[in-house]
Length: 454
Image (cartoon, rainbow, N blue to C red; front, side, top):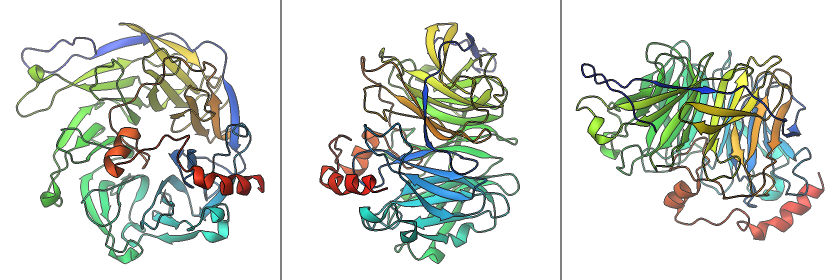
């Protein structure tokens, strides 16, 4: 990141502002995964059936359905994907996969807002052949979450180091909190799950688990878009013996804006983790921890860059970092809302110390997009863009990257969101990582036969 100017009195970093060019260029080819319900609201990845292909969990807010989409293969990836409705709930806001009860089957966790205000577990079937059978899924509400808050986002993560996976979750508006649900020894005994509040919130948007201080404990990184404590934050895990005490909070930036979704990045390739956030009707905010010589004793210092939104795009909703054009440098992909007659999805490439170049992805189709996920869905050597759009009901879609293979994509420092760790994180947790193209080859025969019958 470029040098920053510090005040001798306040020792606060000046904000570096960079310009962007207007969005230009041809739109990428758009492929529809599903557009048969209403209000697609978020996409989260997980290999549901252990066939080595990334599958998708999505909630449809207006349609009231929670669906899984199984990756068909390279040949059929541009067609609508095989799907199953894992559950039917009111106003689902977020859906994410995890093996909650550690029975070997992937389950789905759904947050709801509106009048329902609950968190649901959708228990998955034990055999791969049954994943596309809606009758094989069973839905139960988590009692500790029922009716209290408008739940917006959840992240399955091991917090206390015992029993099964726990659940970090955040809510919005009245009585909003960020906290975690402590899993009991028997995860199916839902009455035994305990709510552990961590911090009052205004409107939690993103949640990540990242070791921010190198102590081998997962800390919590999150964005909060409303209230006096809005901005991009991280909470320090106090260690297993002090879990129920106060987790120290550190603000990374964004206090002057209504921050939206955020994402980990390493845009300057220095190996230090950064976070980039979109803001409502404002710029992108890039946060990087200041070097040791610029730190203060009582306050952690972060460096900030504001990247202007292009004038012919909507307002920022979500962002993701990855090497889009395979030139060996990370780029940014941005999704928007309020994109009437404007670009709703675009990507930014670094042009100079004062300027980013902006390129079309979606064109002018679509108004309100959500999370952006970068994944090589067609296995052609470049990162495609997976997202969803809910106002024009484009549905769950992916945009095909036209660049093709090059120098290879850049790995992010370890950080996870939505229960889908990158390779480094997965290796630490499980001790064994197999390339996605090779993993689960034993299961592919039965999965392929199953998909052909749909």
